[in-house]
Image 1 (cartoon, rainbow, N blue to C red):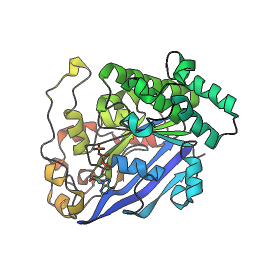
Image 2 (cartoon, helix red, strand yellow):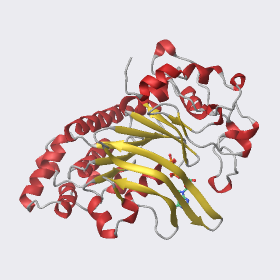
Image 3 (cartoon, rainbow, N blue to C red):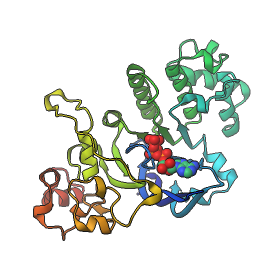
Image 4 (cartoon, rainbow, N blue to C red):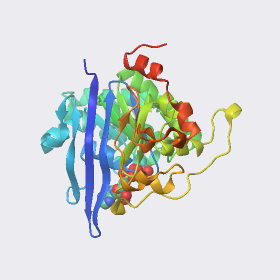
Length: 354
Ligand SMILES: Nc1ncnc2c1ncn2[C@@H]1O[C@H](COP(=O)(O)OP(=O)(O)OP(=O)(O)O)[C@@H](O)[C@H]1O
């Protein structure tokens, strides 16, 4: 049985601008199961937010083009939904939390009313029941004195508390999917840990699938079941948390991991930032978009962009180093070391665990 609640397949998103088309998302595919967390990571501008917003259809209609792809929610292609259908899914089945809580909160409306608004739009609850549910949600996200706080305005809350309120609003209708775009980036480290813990607890209680967008690999390590690594609008590698952290196969993933402070002090290594910067999406050539920054480039990398190769049931990579025609002596040790033996991969494909 297919348990995927969301399947994004070959999604392309482009923006019409005065300087021509900006292909921000190029052939992105991933899926999400009930109750799991998929982290989407990558540097600024790699297309993480555009991917998330295209699921919720929150991109500006006047200059966004989606020439190809499908976004299936419970088997139905959301890109074919009418406005009414999208509005009924948005906020009830799928909710989104952004980095800055003030972008989602109305500064002139009491918090209780803001939670109740979604409930009255998407449920049959009476006003009294909705107020009770709003109070329960504030309690659930750890806001003290929820009854009195229902009547407070957003500016009367601290940044961390505001983000809790936003999470309460997002989860009030029991959505099946929560898309969290850098939900803790604006918060200090202690509050960040509290909010992430809160999201995990709520996920367990409600079996919500989470798409977590972040550039912080520490957050990924704490939260994700699976990881999709984005670069220049493409998912260049995806796999389970262990595959991405311990057997990365794309030079960009390796670079990201090396540029992250090691959480385990016994394995601490010097930080090595990835040299160079990501390409301008409006000026991409025919080759691999990472070629200009990759330490292992071959001629083919500059000429042709590789397709995604599945190297296990859960891990896929877009890199010419995975091509069987690549001479073994050209494959760097750190990539070879991370590769599974054929037996291991075969056992994995059969669902056998050693
Ligand atoms: N409305 C728009 N019009 C034109 N270009 C856009 C628009 N929105 C995003 N872009 C471009 O699309 C590309 C991807 O942007 P996106 O916001 O998805 O990146 P990101 O990976 O989420 O980065 P960040 O971590 O900084 O949020 C960028 O080059 C961005 O400038």
